[in-house]
Amino acid sequence: MADVFDVIVVGGGIVGCAVVWEMTSYGYKCLLLEKNENLVSEASSGNSGMLHTGFDAVADTLELQCIQHTFPKMFGVLEGFGLPYNKIGATMVAWTQEQAQIIPTIAQRCRAARVSFCTEISLSELYSREPGLRKQAQGALWIPGETVVDPWLTAISLAHDAKKKGAMIKTNAVVQNISRTECERQRIQVMTSLGQFTGRVVINCGGLYGDIVDKLAGLQHFRISPKKGQYAIYPQKVGHHINSSILPIPTSKGKGEIIFKTVYGNVVVGPTFEDSASRARPESDACTIRRLVRLGESCVPGLEGCPIVNTYTGVRPATETKDYHIDSYPESCWITVGGIRSTGLSGSLGIADKVRRLVLHQHALEPSGPRRTGLEKMDIKFVPPCHARIDDVLYTVTHPITLNGVWKSRDSRL
Image (cartoon, rainbow, N blue to C red; front, side, top):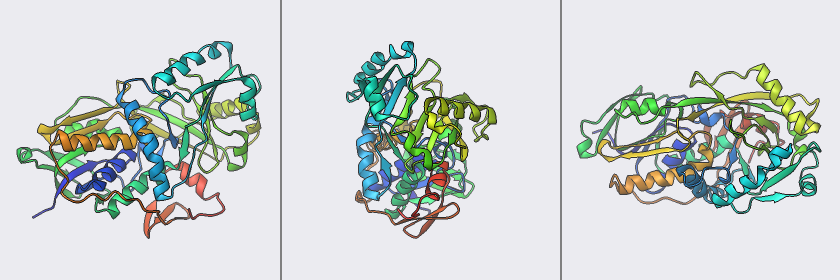
């Protein structure tokens, strides 16, 4: 008789990896299905690697709740696995008097989001902290908790630890059909390109394709509207020009492009926020990259004349609303995790915790095995040109932040 999994997770991005890790750690027998050859190949391979505090999230949203659950917990995970991170903070800079007048409102929003450590700072303090900035600033807000991580390594480590604890992970597994004929017995069949798998609950973490996966189950409560973001990457040698992530004052059109330093020291400008006709990742376009370079040089004069070393794009799974869609359908043996937009990394562990509670309480499904919540340091060695060996398991690196950061470091072992 074929195995029956407690939980089948569809999608191997940061959210799917976090969910399978959480569920396995609490004793659920889990299967993760990823349609690509490698995990972390879609939206999660084109993010910024920023772990946000939630200072600018909308109050009383599910997104803010998940971010605030994730933020303190993620540091324990990073420390436990031995993964790199840098709590560099963020500085929001106003370049005009009109922008400066908005800062008190943003500070009030921080307090509403219970991020009370955001503080307005004087121009003298701004330039003491960030001497490399252009001198025409008119005001600034300091957000000390903002952190950068290796976004690929964080997601892969969660999946790797879940596998060590008993989860099964299948790649090249395209979900083709869903059969709920036995759902009254808490059984649901997932037909894939690798065959059929049976579970008690399916958790759809399909990201950019989440609405399509939902449709296979006869559900259609949101629609993905892809948003493209483009980035320009500078070499590590210019990393000393900024000490924190430099944020613009947000506008009605969005949060604007950031100048930030990755956990490996590369300076990056981006992302843009553009409508995308395709869910597939497009190439960067030269005109937009030139604009990002001009922005970087305008705000940080030390970048002028320094050639960028690479560019990349990401596509975010936005929807018609500005909040997450985490919906439970016990009668369908199904949970949808959709519309996670650009905060999947920042909200991942909070999302996973919420999903676990839905499985336990709304689906009345107890774990079939014991809890395995311990964390162990991982033996990580990067292998050129694009792989990492973690505890003797070889993974393909899919994120440009890792690819451009690691192999310029002196030591490829963490």
